[in-house]
Length: 237
Image: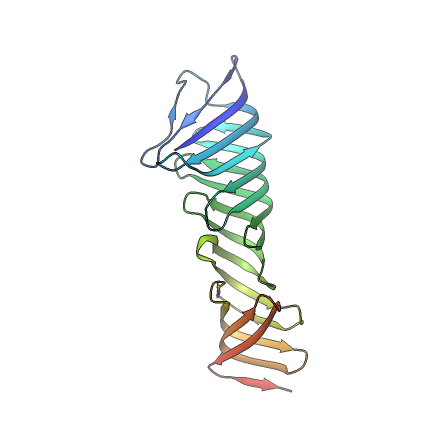
């Protein structure tokens, strides 16, 4: 279920509006006579589990309600999972009460409680399923490794992410791996799999290429400490 609370300005009269939703059905409007288009100066959306525990929240300073969408500005969202909590912010966004997803735009930043940070131009945040997806350029900083590319999906609770294309991976020792993509990273097992036209540039070992690479990284040392090459391996000295 979720609730919406805000100080609202309606075309006909000033009033407040709230919604409640459970996990099995659409939102219901407590005041059916209220104009669906409103300006909300202070708002908060909260999602709850069936047991009444808070699962996520979204708050901001300004918004318009165009049912079923809540149009937000200065968005700040948070998921309160017991494993990995996510705090996400954006310049603006649209929350859809039917899909329970927020479409975010402008300086989207997600901060994970396990130390990870994600930067995007646009993103789709599904607070219920706890996923973040994007078609824009994306940068992930986690475990001392920086990943960059275009398009992707992050599942913080599974400690897993994929970046679709134009991949660049680097560590603090200036070791760089690029590939056409996709890249899949498993933070739990501390490894990343890079596919298609993989090239590594190492300040000490030179340049190598292959069809596929599995890179193992050490979060404490903040470096790629082992690489497995697969298919058409070539070295340039």
